[in-house]
Structure formats: C-alpha cells, structure tokens
Length: 220
Image (cartoon, rainbow, N blue to C red):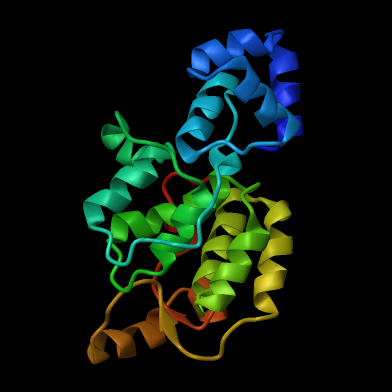
C-alpha cells in the first residue's frame, strides 16, 4: 500500500491519524511518517493495515527470498490464509502473505501437492491485480515462465477474465522450449503418458500436466 493509498483509505473512513494509530498500536507521529512516505510499514504492520482498511493482500511487501523446502502443510496454510475455499478449514490463525510471493514460492517446488497446485490458478483468478511485473521478472530469473504462463492461462479461461491476456502475452514472448512439469516429479512412463494425454493448456506451455481449466472447482 502506497502512502497515498494509505491516506485516501483513512479519509474514506473518516478517521483521524490519532484514531488509526491507536488501533494499530503505533504513535501518531510514526503513522504520519507512513502517510508521508518517510517510512514503510513492516510486513506485520502491513497486515494490520489490510485488516484496518479492508484492502487486498496484494499491497503487502514482497521479498525475493523464499523458503527452499516448505512443507505441504505450510503451503496449504498459506493458501488458506489467502481465502482459498479448498482449504477453508485451515484459515483460522494464519497470516496473509502477498499472493504474488506465494505463487512464486509454489511454482518453485519440484513436487507440489495436487490440491495446492489446483489452487494456483484460483490465486490468479482471485487476485488479478497482483504485481505481475515483479512476478514475471522473478519467474524469468528462475526459468518458471512456462509454469506461470500455464497458471495464468488456466485462470484466464476458467474465469473468463480478458484482463489476464496482457500478462499471458508477456509470458508467451519468453516461453521456454524445454519440456517441464507443473511442479511434479514424474517417472518416464508417466512422462510418456502425459505427452499423449496432457491438456491443451499444458501443451501450449510445453508442460506435462493433465490439469485443465474445466477442472478448477473454485474458478468461475
């Protein structure tokens, strides 16, 4: 959330800096520096601001440093915190993260749990205003543009969202020719089967996956 967005959100609620600062547990002077752009909120304070102003977690700061080996349970809880219906039972007590940062972390995995993988297109569908410029740059640095492009294409088709055509086109221009999977480790028989039976969306992005847009239960 930029300093201007912060100021406008407070004006919209008709609150003073003193009132908001008291609820956030900071001084009015510190809050004033946030609104002027002199200070940037920590991740924890940014989460408080999201709750205070009821804004999207796409405003949370992103970090290029991600966990190397997150557990399936951790990934499920992070996706649940972003309100994924498939993991609604895990939502309580979880902290929201920037959806772009979570998506990058998930796409880096070599063996992602199927239920989490299915939730990634929903993430793009739910947060189409995430920072695709940052996300695309990071994907290129990690050779993940095909996985990201596949995710965006599934979200675009299943969610009938033409606004995703822009990010999809940018990723198409840097598509890799090398065959990849959608975050799964496959043996050779599985690879041969998927080469013949993969979805059209996966074929478009040189991926071995049978995940299709019409299989996404929570994207519509």
